[in-house]
Image (tube, rainbow, N blue to C red; front, side):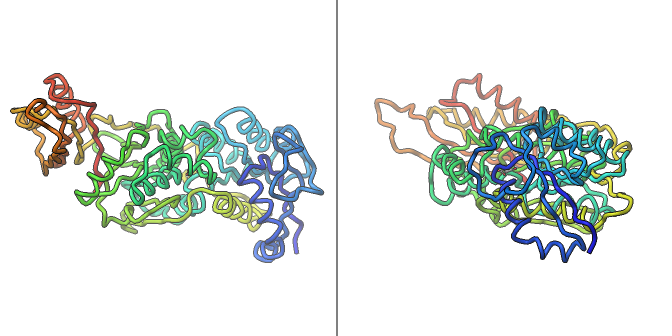
Length: 439
Ligand code: HSE
């Protein structure tokens, strides 16, 4: 058997601790598969005294992950700290400068500095592996980086955040409110330290930024992604969508269009019988439209210590198997220096169907006025449903009434123009809800 592969792990939170346990429990199994043992020789975390769910005795301790990254007896630096700057960024750079392969689960770091870090790794013939950064345990990075290389990809989309899917699933199946479901997701350890990242769609946007680069051979521009989260989705939306044969999912979508690459994250109505609609709870799914393969849908656990540790361990094992020898796999599928800048399609040019929930002052002409504002923008309506509340009396005939509209394919700019006019007409009792439909 060859020399051991020596790891330094920075970050011993849920994922780090799970990884240490997995590497210990599967030591012999992995050694047999990789042709060399994998040893954790050094670790770093914020608080040395903290009680943690893994045994780190016999491992060198570093308070500073950047020092760990420069340890000459470490072959692979595993970054599980998180964050797009600071210690995570500094330590990954130091590791690459010191000639170490890097494995990271850090989507925020890659979304911001991924191309630069990939260039550094490739210049030095090192591997920068990040399977765990997108969709937890689903092997989507390797599939896109290597297996699908011959395909021209036209669209990649998916449920990329377990917390949001968990919340939406429970709201739908149990009729619960948003806050209650969020609290449970946090208690179960699915949500990020700051749940805003999950529920407002930024976590999905970081992952989508990485998938876009892999799909289209482009540079990464995560700050330009259109992002809307799920915090304003109500049980009324979920119920109305269900009545019309849809489920609401937070999707990240990257798609080639005539005006550039569309990159968007938002709650989306998907037909209840679509494969993506069958993805429940913390599970993630990624769908890829390729010209040779057709549509591929991969699903699996997208969050949680063990699922993420599975992906990190796989990345480490890949390095263990490939050593020694030249490292020739570009981190982002295309050599980093060849990744192209790209034109991003404007959100206003987006085309699709729309679900609109209005709260309408129930008076003569209100309905006709809405329909005519839609017609002015050439928006054709596929269905109109008015749920009467039955609360109005002769004394107060203006009780607000929920009205649900579903449009045929139209443009975002037409919808926004119609909304402006409808708002000014004074028939709305509350802010309208608009959710895009993905077929
Ligand atoms: N917080 C993320 C999620 C997991 O809920 O999917 C890590 O990306």
